[in-house]
Structure formats: structure tokens, C-alpha cells
Length: 129
Image (tube, rainbow, N blue to C red; front, side, top):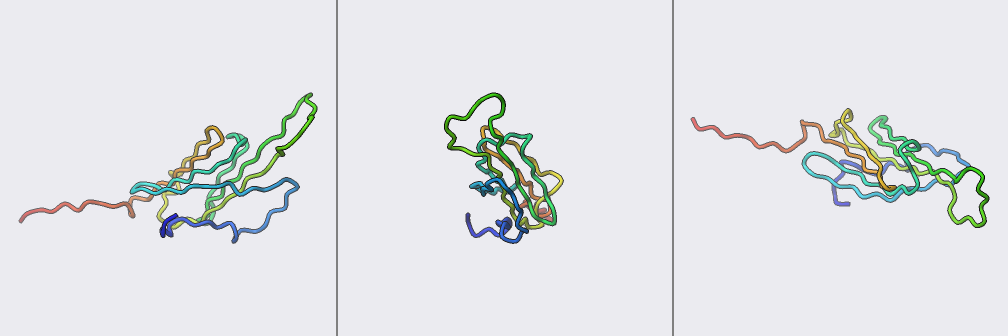
């Protein structure tokens, strides 16, 4: 990530949560253009019904969980266990909170954080007098 300080990891400032399941910090890539920030997180095994994304006091919190295989199957070998994913980011006040959108596809979560109009670059027209 570059020297941009508009969005920063905030995990260490959040209260610790107790859980019997493993909690994993998903790896993320963060991108920026003139219109938005984009957070892309690897969350394999997480589906849209097991993910929660919320924004509270300038902190974006991403949480998700995987589910164990259920039913009449008996595990003969097990290398993967159910896990919870959790990641949070401190957002600068330049994000238009009402327009935050997210989608998950193939275990990859994409969160789009549009910038408010007040901070977007703007071309100033020049008039002749």
C-alpha cells in the first residue's frame, strides 16, 4: 500500500472477541482511483449469507464464517476446519457511507467505498472576460 492514509487497518484498536472457532485475518488488497477506494479480500468458503459488513464510528468491519459440511457424511480425514474471518479498517471522513457496496464471488469479497463529492478532483472552468 502506498503512503495514502485515507484508509488504514484498525484491527488492533478493536476489543478482542472470544470464540471457540479459529479467527483468521483475510489478506486484502486496497486500491484507489479518483472516485472510490476498493477493498478486495480473500475469504474462501464464505458465502453471502455468512458474511456481515458494517460501518460504525468511521470503522469498516468485515466478518464472515465458513460452515462445516453437514448431513449424513462421516469425515474420514479432515484438514480444513470451520473458521471465522474478521478484518477492520479505519476510514477517513472522505467516504460516502450511504453508497458503500459489496459483493462476494468465488470466495473473493469486493467492497467499494465511494468518495464523497467534496473530495473528488474537479476541473475548474476558465472564462474569458
